[in-house]
Image 1 (cartoon, one colour):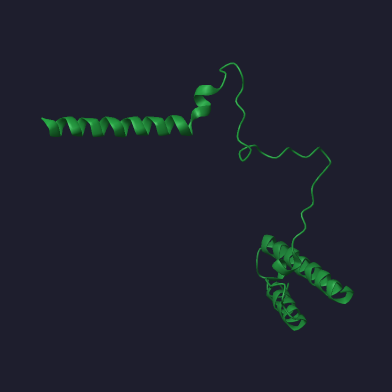
Image 2 (cartoon, helix red, strand yellow):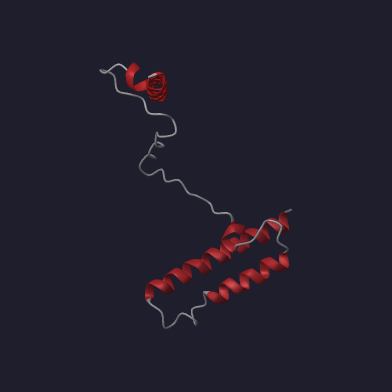
Length: 125
């Protein structure tokens, strides 16, 4: 008989602890005024939309475009540039679809722009 009472007491204490933990983690559900809209946590609030015509331009890191670390030597930069331009050469993609050729052309332009930025950084400083 004593074992049953101890087992029942243990079960009730576990249920009470679980209920308290649920209440503690979700306290905002019980304390909020039902007539007021609830505020979302800051991590969930999306950033505001930019105004029409005010487009944000994101600049890519030229070393990431080339797939290099910032500690790469000028010789590594030159070799990587040559390899990437060769991979995306129009002669190699002549038999491919128009979409792939357009993507390769964009990639070549990206590589050239990144290379120009890296070489200008090196010449300036």
